[in-house]
Length: 273
Length: 241
Image (cartoon, rainbow over the protein chains, first blue to last red):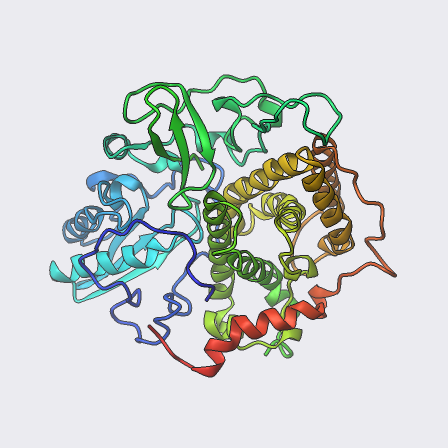
């Protein structure tokens, strides 16, 4: 469609980059990726749980909190475990289960596995690679047919990243997202970190708010939240809380670029959504 | 392609077309943005929008065909995007003001649609970042040098006529349009005040304004944009890589 714009992490992946999402579907439409109708995020569908916490069906005994919801629970839970262990294609230090993007793994009939996957960001190009990797892992484990569906509701939030996932991100030099993004809901824009050289021409009004790490984005410091303290984004290298925003968009849509003013290292921050 | 389909079945099509067209326009900045961070930022915003468009088109597959067919094989008059998003990028200030005008509309629109439309519930958090990006840059440019201020004001004056169309009700979408317009005016007015810019006073409706994109009537640059966007697919039908 439009040329794929953002520079992406260039880790080699073991599986083919192009794949239809389902091994039983036709091979048409590989350029656009999604076979028609593969997405199940119908707008007529249930709004339940959109604003509330995690989906009701992510609960039972399966590893990493993945629902199996199937009569063939043993088998499905094994598949759920395998699918959950697939590494994220762009952040291979975390698994899909730790990232919280795996919604449901069921086996509606023997040998046929249905996987529901939710994207981190609507346009996340890694979804297709994830689907291909899951498919490959499950087929190697004996699943004759694998179908990976993309679901949008309820929306993924950085709150869905597990504690283990957060630890791994930090260990990899990426500041993990702060918790509480879902509860804060869609938030308004923050104050400006604009820096001005004194005496420059232009505006004549009162001075703008100074640049501080706590007023740097639409992440809770919105207009109705001005002045409210928020836990700082810590440098994943030295642990300092003295960090500043360089750019709201970094190597992928889900990350922002920050810099530590203590150790001077730039780092990615998994921004809250 | 769309002639025989009842309008309500296509209620979300304008949302998808807005996203696709603006995504393409932002993609045109690749290789041309003023600084590397902006190259990445605009590309990431474009990617979010492309994802929105694909989600809408995937839902409409039964009535309109595959995502590729919807994006690459419709004629200009079949696109339902507003005219604002199809406007050429102009200079950086022009693109930023277009972003501010559009994201200040799209973000609350998604908030209103979130209970009934999973895509909107998903995208509303992303579009908050888009709006913030546009706001920060509008403040920098409006409150920057004389040159940046003048260019930003010029962009606002030029794009103003395309903003009235945003609030024309779309059949089948349950949105309080007047309330949406009030929210938009408050947001834009607030940002402009802080940026030292003047909210334009030119016509936004009726004669001398623009805006029939939702009916498939588009401005001249859109045809050229589509020609470039669709050229590859039309020249090599079914090609993959």
